[in-house]
Image (tube, rainbow, N blue to C red; front, top):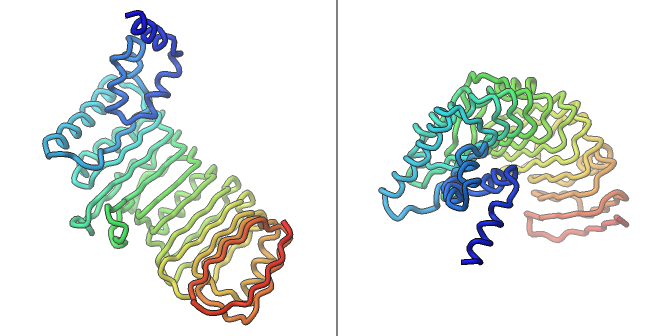
Length: 336
């Protein structure tokens, strides 16, 4: 009995401000169970500003799946009814619950206190090609700092399915710092409006967004830019991004390296490229545009040169993946 009382006393000693943080690291259903620990935990659970719903990977039956959906719907409805602020919302949901997902997203995105929004819509092989469109208001939060939108399959071999961004969304997320779109189709016009509005962006990741033109300009605070594509005719334009330190371009199906216009990559220290042809022009580009390069990762599609002498005094790490199985005469001098 003394041990149990001591345990309860220790739980009561947890600072009240720390309890919501601990609960925010748990899925909502697990966080809800902490209400039995003590009165402090009970009251904290009912008002935690961090909601994290991660659907279990497998339900034993449809009844349990239905119960879980009802629990999610009830929790969000109570937050809205009680006008409880939501600062972060992390949702992982199956495409079958798309109608509920849109309802929740609209409700949560409308909150002015929302700072982080992470949505992952999942589907199985049988539902390949089923379209999900994110609601118009998903970009309307003035205080939104992090936006992660993902459309994922249970099979890593599916590339054709994607979610879609509204063609004419309300964009008012002027505080946005991190933007990640994964298998989310977005138009060039919407991306241009996003970049023009979100001038405080620090990190952009665009994965398989079905864009032929990637134009990133006038982002003074941008530090990381990652682009993953499958298009043969990509056009990359990066200009006036003086703070950029990491640049990644990956093309999974390209057989020749595209040309790109990037005027302000002087300060990039980490560069990763896939689908490159190592020739004299490419080596000159690396030498002239990246004087402070420390990490270079290349997936090489072709190697027309008989010999490569690679000299970079600033380089600390070099990773080469050769796609063609042929003999290469490589000489690297990089003392650091």
